Image 1 (cartoon, one colour):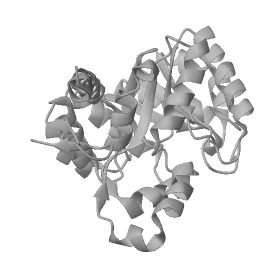
Image 2 (image 1 turned 45 degrees about the vertical axis):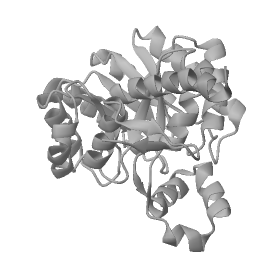
Image 3 (image 1 turned 30 degrees about the vertical axis):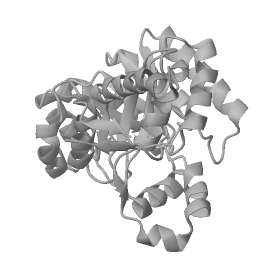
Image 4 (image 1 turned 180 degrees about the vertical axis):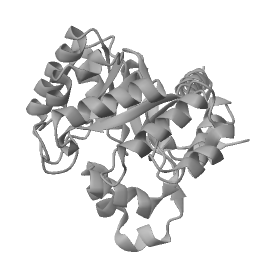
Length: 307
């Protein structure tokens, strides 16, 4: 059997994995982007999980309104909760109660939040330790993961922090999941997955990837988030080349991950898309993958869309 014939079954299996990942993808949206939600609805299947990002300029009224809109449209709202932004324990309690009572929210993504502490809560752990999530009938709690590390927190601290929060969530009778910061390289993602799966084979994990957008947009967001890809991208591409590039998507990363089944299939693993180029655009791109309207590019590591 020649090398090409041997490669075809493996390629078909990788394509099947990609379509499966795309079919269960989650996304995120800002609390004010009702126009973006309306534009994306034809491309978002019912039951899709949509995170509501946390930005300081958004009000609780706007967060609750977006959660309500997502629920009414048949989606699963997944609001971010930035612990350090709350001026008081009561403010967190009040928002969680409104999300549950007014919008039917049962899950949240709990983070520290990139700001100076405004009240008594200094971390996601502190927010979880209040007991407010369980009291307001939240059933699922998302925790952050960092395949490429964190710019200000050492790797051993990140590991210990995740273990402590997993224990806290489970002790409260809720189910944890991990949603990772977006990365542009498959190798650190696969290595990180392997490390986590040694202790947590059944933990649901969603791998964050940046959706189709311009290279300059992606690198700008990466710099804001402290993602290692920002430094690597500028070093590899050079500023003059970046200016000439059009749009890019995460297909090389998705393909590389699909070709490493030992990483993806060691436990429940899905994708989460950061739609920096727009929610509708990202959802349409993902749907093409889910529908199998692509082939493995003959050259390079990407995908060739056929639909």
